[in-house]
Amino acid sequence: MMYFLGFDVGGSSVKFAVLDECGKFYDRGSFRTPETLDDFYTQLAIAKNKLAERYTLTGIGFSMPGAVNGTTGIIGGSSALPYIHDFPILPELEKKLGLPAAMENDANCAALGEVWTGAGKDYQDVAFFVLGTGVGGALVHNKEIIHGAHLHGGEFGYIYVSERKNILSESGCSGALVRQLAAQRQISPDELDGQKIYAMAEAGDKDAQQYIENMYEYLARAIYNIQYIFDPEAFLLGGAISSRADLIPNIEKHLDHIIRDAEVARIRPHIIACQHGNDANLLGAISNLMAKHNF
Figure 1 (cartoon, rainbow, N blue to C red):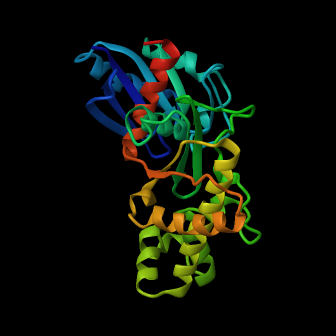
Figure 2 (figure 1 turned 90 degrees about the vertical axis):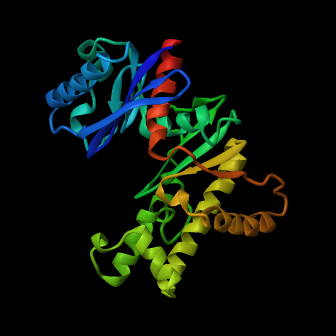
């Protein structure tokens, strides 16, 4: 039995857990995301040292924000944690924690977690969506992430879907619903969230209903286009909104219209809701670690 330590690094908290090589969870914990790099290293070491008293740890996997380059060990792009970017952080983590480590982008980790033991376990090629305040994603081919030349593989939020709100991150997620309706009502976005907007729609609010319908349409457009560009076996939808039973049927309703209008389209996208929720990132961090180090 091998035990691994996974860290899911977010803007407000860092979650961690011990997992085995089959993806079974053991001890878990979390701490508030530190404000400095030195404190970040310190808190990681405290968590690791406590768990190392109970488990013989083989390695450490990290789910990180930003444009993660697991080969150079450098995180490009930007995130809520500026101190993790633009230097070889991976070798430093290995040095300070004393174990082999690997890191991957958080959305990519979530995808890897789902194709390891979750909704995508029976597929080799999937397109993975994270629907939240924005739209993230990942492309998986033969159970491996397609990173792309600029580490932007699977950045579905940039897809141009509408002349009104031109990219998917501004039209195809719960965050977009909040921003759009708040702007129309001239209220603070803090007064709304996705659940409130759905409740408003169910109570008969025409604007809320229209924004939600638009979201379904734009997601259907993106999924249709990706089907004929990448040709995955399945689409996995994650994020809080993916738990809604009506999400996939409503997207499929718009896919029906698109496929009918396209006429020559014969492949219908297969859409599945993710299974692992917040655990997917930790699972993917360990899956990536085992692949990188051949554990």
